[in-house]
Amino acid sequence: MSSMLSWITGNGAQKRKAAPKDAIVALRAHLEMLQKRELHLQNQMAEQEAIAKRNINSNKNGICIHMASLRGPTQLLSAKVS
Image 1 (cartoon, rainbow, N blue to C red):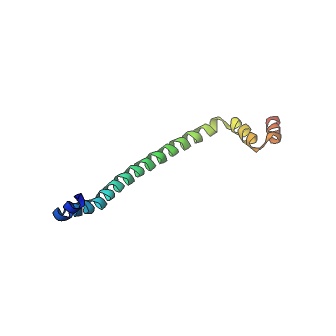
Image 2: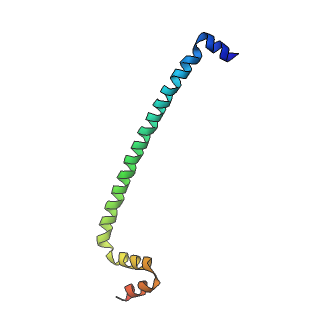
């Protein structure tokens, strides 16, 4: 019954025309939010990379031992000895 009434009054056509527009607006808002998030994450990565580069100079011995531990237990012993 309501579909018949909307057909007579024309309200259904307006809703059908507005639906794609609403979807486009929602998608644009979502895209904008994702772009802001991407920029934020890129900034975080750059900050962490800068921190890591600063720490490389002060922690060279710890890095050598850590890298040796990643290679395996046999090379860990040779890394500690040398």
